[in-house]
Image: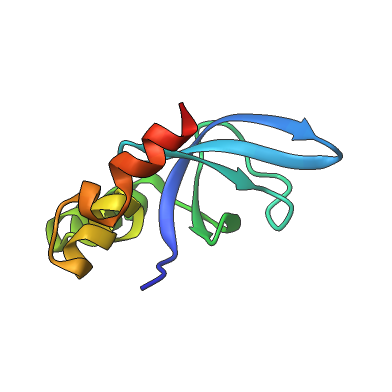
Length: 107
């Protein structure tokens, strides 16, 4: 599933000519492109889908939506550890689907 999730803008910078932000999604922090909402400011909330801020959102609505998503387990589903998700689908541990092996290979 791929959700549009509300997040709070923590900081903004221009990177290679593109306006980017660090956004907090209820404790999960990701980089987001702000090109569709160019006047968004630090401290404001936006609806974000696949790494793009799409629309400004008021704080109350954002907090209510994040709380509901958390209650339903949707934030973990959307932002959870990909190794854990793969392990759950495979019926094993993260190591069973390459988690430890991939980490060892990167060392």
